Length: 355
Ligand SMILES: Cc1cc2nc3c(=O)[nH]c(=O)nc-3n(C[C@H](O)[C@H](O)[C@H](O)COP(=O)(O)OP(=O)(O)OC[C@H]3O[C@@H](n4cnc5c(N)ncnc54)[C@H](O)[C@@H]3O)c2cc1C
Image (cartoon, rainbow, N blue to C red; front, side, top):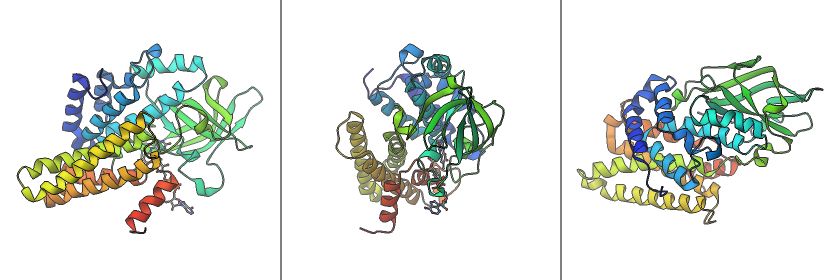
């Protein structure tokens, strides 16, 4: 399959997701049906190697898929990214038995996985002590105690890939079933947007992790040691650019009837095309800019384009069920999601109009 040509079933899926995006945003419940449509269209298989019943799509194909999905329903696409984050960690694990056990079930949608690792990178870093600890037991197992502050889809997931810190400051990553004794999931916070992602804290009290559930570690900086990569990867920028494209397309449509909007729509569409190309080049490994620079520019574009769409939609766009208002709320998410400190600093300087 050429990287920019998506199968017809993906186009049909995107149409269904676009048609139901307002409902997903408004009803604040886990989007069970949307997840089922994704499984039926084979979306989970994109990310999993063929030897584990996936389709092993290339990074360019996944990029095209993510861009199409995020233009249609950001909540569903975001949930997929957290599933994918867990899946990537498992694919990158050296535990073949764990891969064989879980990956085929994730590929066909039989099991759902998510990730709780941000407390090792972008969350709670100022506290000076880990919020989730692991202590090694004599039999080789580990006991987890504490909390994982942000876990998307925890109540819907069968497995959470969790990061935890040992007394000697090394870290582990482990795949823990959500029905394990001592794990308490919550239905999720009410959020500015994406509430239906059911994101919330997970509490852990003396949760046993068996050696065969270890995805990686114990090692220093476990997130870097496993092929899932660190924070601020290209995926977050991909979703921001996808959302920007939805807003810019809306402006272009409006400009057909309102000539004063034409230069605005043209400029934002050109900005989207520019970042889309940069994203593709970075995905191919060309070092045209850093991933952090792309993220910062994507954050700027998603805020500008969605607010421009809202301005053009006027008061009608401020009605809760209008897509322009939803896009503007969703764009705020990129200010806080998996945002490495240099990106946060750059965003703040731009907002304060500091050089
Ligand atoms: C909707 C949503 C879904 C998410 N899903 C997941 C997921 O599935 N898995 C996952 O691993 N992560 C997830 N994350 C986490 C995300 O990637 C970031 O790690 C998170 O947004 C960082 O925010 P925080 O409030 O935890 O940051 P923190 O840095 O912990 O800040 C929390 C508060 O502490 C205070 N503070 C911060 N820094 C300092 C300082 N230096 N001195 C004093 N006070 C300070 C501030 O008052 C701040 O509001 C999700 C986040 C959101 C919002």
